[in-house]
Image (cartoon, rainbow, N blue to C red):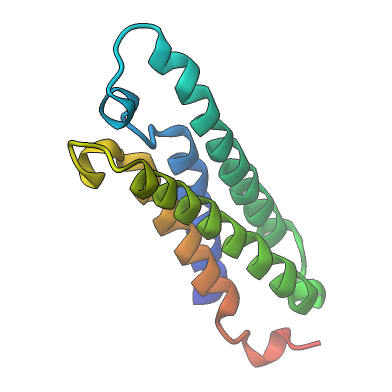
Length: 136
């Protein structure tokens, strides 16, 4: 298997896993306790749904599309992978804007970093030069 394809598949799988992990610590981020954090976390979960669907599209695209569609898929794959990275960067930017008293690292959780890693891996894999045999 080509390194490019492996990176995209691995990045897509990591995107899907990271989308289901917690991204933020709402009690630290907003300094609230009780049932309120559950309502706030729903908004953050929408970003996980977006990145999870992007990972699923990237995964199915590279598993089921043949070499004939590699160039067209590279453009759309790059857009999707970049979008997943931008979603994570947007969430991180929002945490920086909120400026939690405990700090950025305490307010964010593992899902944010795992999703960023998956998006960057997929983007790198899509941007790699395809092998000569895959050129259309």
